[in-house]
Image (cartoon, rainbow, N blue to C red; front, side, top):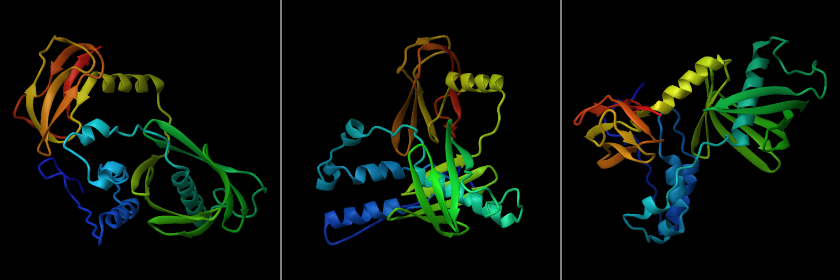
Length: 278
């Protein structure tokens, strides 16, 4: 299903309570780590971050705290737990087909790793599984090389052990990969597809030259005009969303090629607002 821009963005609320603030915060962190929401964009990472801040724990925050302190996390490689869970899911799905060319049963040459590749946004991630015995593999990613054993695999999760830890990853199969959730953070792992480099370059240029709405909202004001030269960081459009004003700024310097919205217009997330010429 889809959530349109005509609805309040709050689609779920997490509430915890306890006898003391410190105990309630402990329960909050635990609940956020176990929270599962795949599909919609959420603020789970932000909530996890703020729940660990000493200022929040002490109740010593003011209206400017988030603006001064919060720095969005940059896109990074998924944790090794996610990659290994996806590889285990692929291995077990292949074994279940009964196809000996896809299976990882004992007829294979000992010590030969099976390699998998996944894509998260523009990042490619590799994982290799070398079968050691029944439900046991040597798993290798860029972060870790360790012996792991499969505990359980279900339609919605993969559970395995690494050293003394039991890893529980919620994972949902898609035609082009997996939606996975680990410690409250959702990841969209896709299987890489070969792309025409010429088309890829054109697409990247199109993204760089178009400024899009970061969320659904209403256009309040437009600060520039067609043909105007702007600098990086200069305000272009002001939007209202979630009862707050949000400023869309120029990513790089350039010339405003076209303004595609007008004040008072409601736009969906991802709607192109301004086209730029670098």
